[in-house]
Length: 304
Image 1 (cartoon, rainbow, N blue to C red):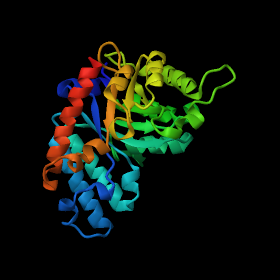
Image 2: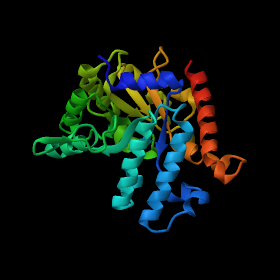
Image 3: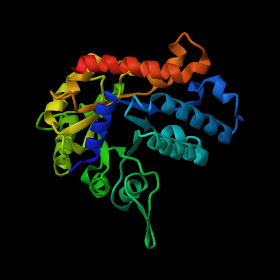
């Protein structure tokens, strides 16, 4: 039976592109040709964000398989921001893109279930089951162990959804915790990887990959290669490309011999491509498309 990762793989093959576009719209990233149309209050700012997101989706939906909106860049604008998040997710899905909600939730019991209801499952209201954000994937912080992951796994199985669990993140200080060694000499990130590998066994799909995936940063290529061996059935969400310094050659270490196994996130390098282009600011969406094509070719060459 096909799982959520199988459908992601189908989109990757269809677009010939193992890329996810991060939609992390800081207001200063949005070109003036968009922001000048709207008032400078919360409502106007969020309208500008939504127009910007939609334009980038319109420019790339046929060449990029998925988007990854980071919830923080919407929550910071309150209710209006969350409306923009919801509309962004809906619009991307209408265009045929899959949605990875970058929420990094981590809690236990009914709280974890509530988070899962909101994004992967359904919220019970008396005799009804109401879909809320209805995205295909979420990101999860595993610090609380299986208690914080199991509700998402159950909804993933029930509703054919998936998740990417933080294992070795791309930020500079990740090693403060993740690289600590336990009594048997293994690092924390290796311990987490082994748990992810075990948790994902019951959710493996037709292509041999589980709906329980892993976040592994491109900025640590040695660990990327190491973790591919530890988690052979986990699909990797790979941040750190471009602005954070990760390159295609290093990223290829996270892929399997079949050319699958990973999807590479690019946020600033795609959203702000217009700032490096020599064209007009009004051509910001075109610049994003051109950068997406360049990135696709670079990644595919390295992976193959």
